[in-house]
Length: 264
Image (cartoon, rainbow, N blue to C red; front, side):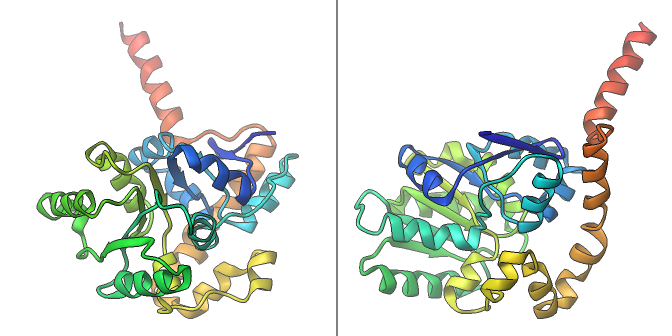
């Protein structure tokens, strides 16, 4: 099965190697997890942006479990923080791959750039920029970022400013970035690459407990996401299993359409 549907989101059932090979021809990559799927239930702009991605690959072991519960099976968890190092390692000797890093707090993207270039052995990261808080609402800064990316000669944009900002930003501005062939939405990955934050132990990631490690590491920032906003996910998956799940705003549009027909 090439695609698996979870809560009205089509996820590409690919291995990491399959995805890396497909990216030779370019594309936009989003990495859905439980947080994304819950935000997508309410944010229609986010949903529309998601549907414009070339590839949507599973970023959560919990989604793998959910796919099995629904009678399908995702091949592999491909989180942004696993995909990005796999990407720059796979393309380390490809001179056409030149990456621009966008995201994280001041100085973090630059630190990630230095560490990655040292690891790869060439300047695969050609430039980096850490935007101001709320930059997505500042058109002047966004246009300055676009100009900087275009000047850099980059062919790949790796953006880590959190969902849904990074996905919406890519879709809004991709047409102003003619030299960028590959767009990667990678969340907190730049912090990991810079050594600013530590990832969970591998065993926690493999069994689906990476969220717990992040919660313990950043409880004030993440408690609401994991303990409140994410909990309805399991009930929605049960509803999908029983075939009476509906995405709220999709159902609302259908209802409005029917009301108009009746009114006429």
